[in-house]
Image 1: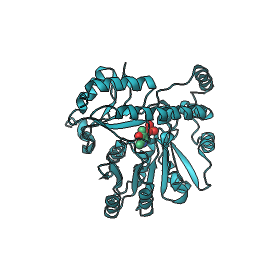
Image 2 (image 1 turned 90 degrees about the vertical axis):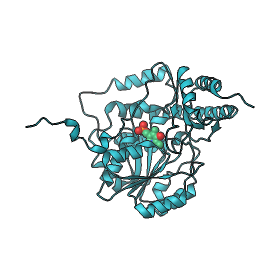
Image 3 (image 1 turned 135 degrees about the vertical axis):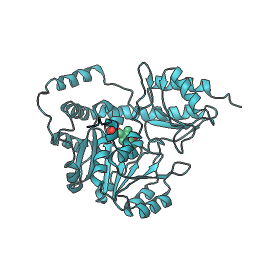
Image 4 (image 1 turned 30 degrees about the vertical axis):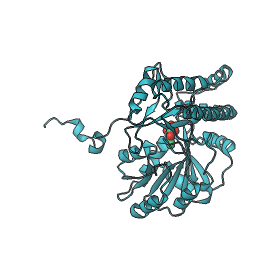
Length: 362
Ligand SMILES: *Cc1c(COP(=O)(O)O)cnc(C)c1O
């Protein structure tokens, strides 16, 4: 037999993809990935390690995570009896389960652009068309265009990030309500940034059978443990649960998440500190010449550099050991960069570096 080229076996659309790239961050101030910059105080770390030391790593983890679920209910409010939760290895995994579950021959997904890139990426992995409706120039929802897209494509799944990444804003809740009421399929409200947001639409899951709320521990300060949860109708989650790989939440993650929830007030306090720092950062950035700084309800700030300067801004920051996200080559984000809110000291260093590349005012 002729030797085969293994690459020829791989689906064409996958071979055309670029792998999700993660920048090398060694020695850098990391303001590119919306991580919480604070660690836990020493006594808490010791207590957490104590908890981990009781785990039996030779055993499979608990698959149902009932106790963890109860704790989440207690911390984030009681749910109605027909609502349940499904856990993912990060909320990315839950997005993947959702897309896999609806992947019938004619199915499609709808979202907006610019938004969280994983919606589109995961659709590509699974082989489901993903339609993206552009936001307005002010990054608001274009309700008319969205309604039109719903009628045209009849998407099985609509993803709305609230607040949106990478724009940081909250869309008009009335517009979202209108989309929910006229939806052709499931609506997933992705509240990854809920800890930093003044508003939540989590109540929509209680009022509408086809609405699911997606949350994650990542932005709250636990990006390393990979844990996300989806809240929605029990009967829908039960179907998704069938394609969840057994034991997707490992024992270290379960125990760490339970420990973190017992000390949730600390994480909430860190989130409040970051919100105060965000206000300061936005105010300081707005005093710099030549950049447009967008409002944010998340733990990052989107800004527009002077025309054609985004790459230079990014290079200068990198030279000063500061990593942010350059979005300027993406559609609808010309000249835009996104900086994660860090500690007061990190933000000050970012501002000092940014200032050196911007044109002198006047
Ligand atoms: C970061 C982010 C997520 C992914 O979170 P993980 O739980 O770390 O997979 C989901 N949605 C949005 C909008 C995000 O920005």
